[in-house]
Image (cartoon, rainbow over all chains, first blue to last red; front, side, top):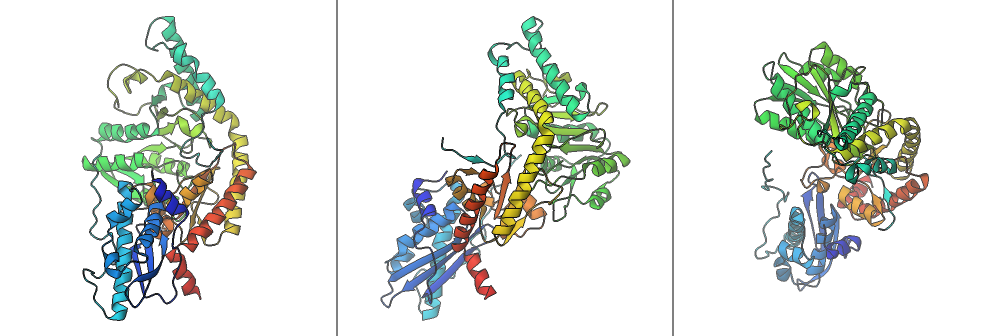
Length: 147
Length: 393
């Protein structure tokens, strides 16, 4: 059900781990739904993401999207990182099964949450960045089933 | 195909060699329609009769109480819907449990949409139905109690005899979904006061697509499939003769092997449980330690998500299953694990291993080693584990 790229990132996750004294840390998702993603950012004085690490509790797609998202933002300027959408993460993985698209959304939100934390700590405003939701599944409706 | 270790026998089993042998002549040799008058048809009819005798004998039932179906789900649907219809004049209340298979639960939801009310009785932390709650739920308009014999996820065996006594005492019909139990543990419909029982062939080394519903004589039951006169006109359609023959052969084999198989599986099961508990920290055995199917092992590993665990096991050639949400396509983990009181994040980290009589100790050694490594790896990746370690310091 997963693409080769998803399987590769799941088996060999890039940038898995923690950053001590990170510039920004963001955690999103909730255990109720089975996915929690945490992103650590190390951002230099030129607002370039020097290093990024992740930790994820979740399914294969959740791990793979975290891994891919870290690859996509590493070395980028904050504003560039802001442009990375969940769709871009999913496309970079050669697609995700429809039921797993929310995992890519989680990756986008985790990056944003870490940037928000960085912005708060440094008293800056990042254009287009909003306070992260505490639960990305808020407002998500399950399709009604008919029997 | 790469060599693999199959520990998902609650999902389905390998069709036994002797079962396939028994079925083969009924495809291209004795292919007659059992309803036909000529001798080619008679041979098929005879084969169906023999299979029905074997199945009836296995339950202490009569042959005219066995109705072949296309499997366990159909039998469950039939038992619930047809009983509801036939007894609606008596009442419109059904009692079941919170941990039933979806074939029962979703059928109950369907009944609810059609004017019936359903009480979902709770279970204790080991998955045993609360008998006092069950008895208290009975109302004057209760027509049916449907409680599974043994649970498919956590393997808990219900106090079926007591449930049967309660149903009988109150004059309520008792149906049991015995898909997981049938062929694994002895069942006697009279002793347990069972009025209806569903079972499936492919869970006991028989073919897929065949099962049956036992309906005690005297129970009003409506036809489930209208058409010809097959199955005493209750379930029309030309009989799946090879399937029925296969089911009969599988039942005969299961009865013959039951004692030996149970002894072997129970020993390996308990050894597997002991090793996992001893070697992997922060795990929890789900289901009752003693009142459980001989082949079922179900653990939750904290801080780990089930689908990730399954994919990594699959990469090592190990077939297992999980109650994680990701394996069901919804956001919620298994209703069974939630019903026994597990918090969501622990329910997501469950792993079910179901053995067969072919499972070896060497295979289980390989599996325990793999689980240890994988759980460790996934925990290193888990923010929940990171938080847990920080809190502990």
